Amino acid sequence: MEHLNNINYFSYVDTTLRTIYFNLKSCYDQSQVERLHKYIDECEYSHSQKSDIMSNIIDHNMHHNETLKYLFFHELHHYLQGIAYPYLYYLTCIEMKTLFLAHHQINTHKEEIDISDSKFIRVEQSYYTNLSYQLYNYRFEWKGDKLTIDNNEINPEADENVFCTNDLVENSTSIFHYKIIYGENASAEGYWKWLRNPANKSYKNLFLFLSNRLGYEMIYEFLPVISLLSFYTTEPLHALCTLFNKVEYFGDDSLNYPKKGRIILSMTYQHLDFGFSDYTFITDTPVGFITDEQIKKFLDETETFHLHSPSKQFFEEREIYEDALLNPSKNKNFDLLAKNFRPIAIHYNFTDFQTRHTAFHYNIPADVDRNNVELEIAEMAKIKDTVLSLTSRFNTVLPRTCHHGNCTYFKLNLCHRWNAIPKDYNFCSFPSWFALNFNKEIDPIKERLLPLSEKRREVFLQKENDYTDFLQNKKRWDYFHDLTSQTYILNISREIVQRGDIGYAISFIKMLSENKGLHSANNCLSFCMADYLDTEEELFCIDEVVEWCKELKSSMPELFYYINFKSRENDFLQFIFLEHTYKRLPGKYEVTLANGAWEKFIDSEFKIFEIFCSSHQMNYLYYFKKTFSPLI
Image (cartoon, rainbow, N blue to C red):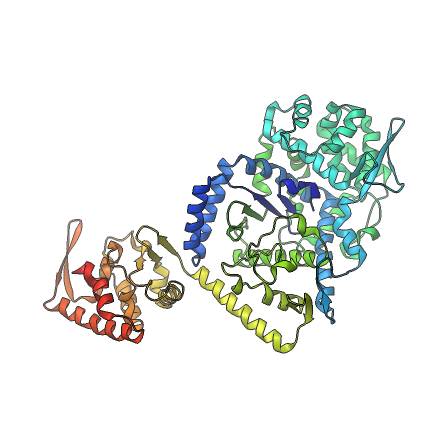
């Protein structure tokens, strides 16, 4: 995890899931934000439309939001470090294993658990060590011209020159970040000035400490490569001292720095040879040098451990990608990295939007089942965040994703980073999801976790199934809400027509009726058949469209109650249900109604409206006139 001081940015890389999280204000002004809020809410039940809107918002901010671009360079480097630094890669896999272990311990615990304020579920101490290893502090000191680590007990408030492994990670990222911003104009002197400018929020504690003795020119040149090389051992900070104490052996050929550094470490440390499954806890892992053979063993054993593990790709062409990582500002190296190592998931939380209007943006390879991967990432994120909320305070330094302060579960803080926030908290899926995944029922009043009985399991299972059906329906419909006409334009694809899926339209109409109310649902619907725009024939002349519409009307006689005949998009419907003949003329159709066709149509619809409206205690004359007056 990133250093806690980074909460000023509220952006971080989830090293366990290799997902980047951005939490920042958008580049829109308040009036634009309010309009977008309303627009997104109107697409509440259209997964595809909402996804398109959020994609456009993200794309706009990536081009116009300077803070987001600034943070993107920073967090992308952290993502790349988790790929390119061997021991950091190992640590991320250990984190994953640790979280599954903690989840299992909670799941199998058979007694009630107190989760009142300041109470946490206690798991093995080594669990906490695994997750906070990179934040363990060491005091550096110079003994003559040698950099050493003082192993005496540290007083964090009084001692100076105290650093953790994460400082090594962050300080090298600051240099990478600077090089991206200034490109070919980047220099040691420029970085020294940039670093000392308070306006540039950057990590500099380790850089300044080393520069005071060795000079900023040397540290600018060597800290990035020595940072990378230090993670070729299982004790990065000790390796840092070793490499700086032997920096004269690197020579002046920067292209050979990585190779020479690995030789130094290879001659200094014992070579490691163990399997990933041999150790569960960091404290048990042996100290030594991670050889290429050991890297290969790690990668072979953990390739499927993560959803996304591009480390093998990196090490197959290590020389090329290491040069790009250490020198991102030359020869389009950054473009090379960004193209070949795109994070599989990025979470965008624009803090001036409602927290439920956050979005995961996925970069999933074409040969992978997108829906399954998206679901798996979201579920793993839920488990991780909930485990952390149950066992530690890690999540409290991150912005909360839920805004429903009146919910009885809110104060328990278990759903601090929940990523499926509903419009109404009474319909939140968190309680049922938690019960089924942790084998415990949350009692928000007594603030306890209760063992889950079979009877209660069935109740929560039904709730979870209902929620799953709801999500599937959201993904089912593709529609747009025209705010000017207050009309919902439902796209009917060619595929839906050809397979005769009238349930697609019926379920959408029922959803509108339930959410808007039957009165408001009157004249609110238009059909759009965009897939047929490439044909010269009118819709009422296409057999499969005519058949689909007639089947829909047969199953839902009151269909026209919902149709907005003021919209020209619905003109084709009247001709499907009016007996007529037509003649194709240049650029148009000439339609002739049969004798008595209009009277027959009106008489039939009047009877339908009378039965339908009367059954709902509505004035059928009013709604009949309101619906068909645009056609008269």
